[in-house]
Image 1 (cartoon, rainbow, N blue to C red):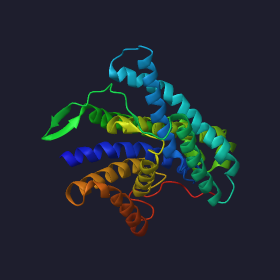
Image 2 (tube, rainbow, N blue to C red):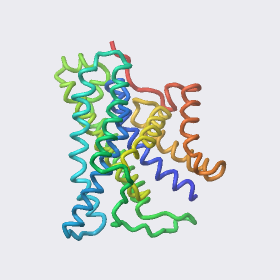
Image 3 (cartoon, rainbow, N blue to C red):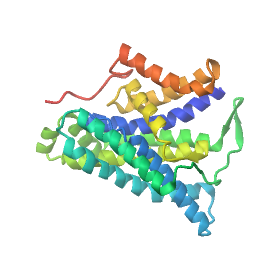
Length: 298
């Protein structure tokens, strides 16, 4: 049971990040490999904001301090997502597929170096504002922070699925994913929808970054690389372009890692499972476990 709970915690964070990958891919057919760095920026800004509030003598309950930090960090990461789309990807929208990929890697390195300039390369501790007292759940030890991560991630993921399926913005996103020129003819501003998709994905990444830092207690300028790569693996595992697949892939990958390191190999080899799963999926079912729901474009 302990390994299952640990897997659900990590898998919930993978799923949130994977949703950003799959939304961008569903609309533009490109992979935003700078997404992990957006996650890192969200975590670092939140930690800095909370430390500033503490230094200014603000004394609030831990959850409220965390919310205040997120309120400061979310607009910054959302603006960063908008800038990435507007400056880096929009000019290359009709370029060969390799060009956006190289650009994404360049942005990832650029954001890491900017973070090093701002926060230095040393890890920063997450402020001690949340309780990490263990709670017994069916014989397994779990903290309140971990329970909050699972519940909050499920609420966010359900909210996103409802937004895409039931709202006007969601219909516009699906229309642009199917055929941008036709969507424009039908009155949908494709450029605006694409920008909003990057903004929304960046907000999800920021929340996941704060969850990651709160769970492990540390954040640093390179923290987004491995979770970002694993979240991409989760998106492919579930079926990239499929929101439900990203959720399933993230949770499944977290469980595979946790159970594998709990019963098969030492924890330092946990990364092996993610990339082994990616190789197997690409060989046996390239479209992912839940297929791909992105229509072919003219």
